[in-house]
Image (tube, rainbow, N blue to C red; front, side):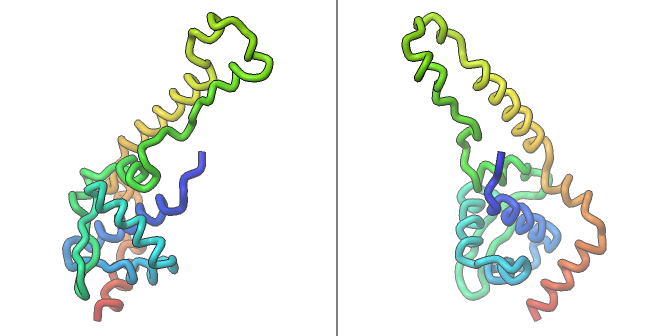
Length: 159
């Protein structure tokens, strides 16, 4: 399974907002500068997080983004679903009923496809694991010097 790079971007922006607290909203341009990302594409990902209720957005010259809820209330799955959408990663198209299986009796296909069932179980486990981890959990695993470096960078950019 491959997630779009927007998931990584969204998670890092959420972590940055959590580290900065409610000091002031962070505009897309600052995130884009911090991570050397294209601002227009990043803004689309951040807006998806706003629509999902993960971030809030304040328009205007002094506007930007803030976390909409505490880091303990935002799961990694929340961010993934906001950016990638709710659709399952695997989609069974019932290829077993094509080609050599096209003439097979219908009774052979009454049970769910075992490939789809196995993939569904694996995806469910993956989603549950992401839903069990919050931004606060990830924050706790980041070395303190990295957090302080981020805070110093934003302080310099704001002055």
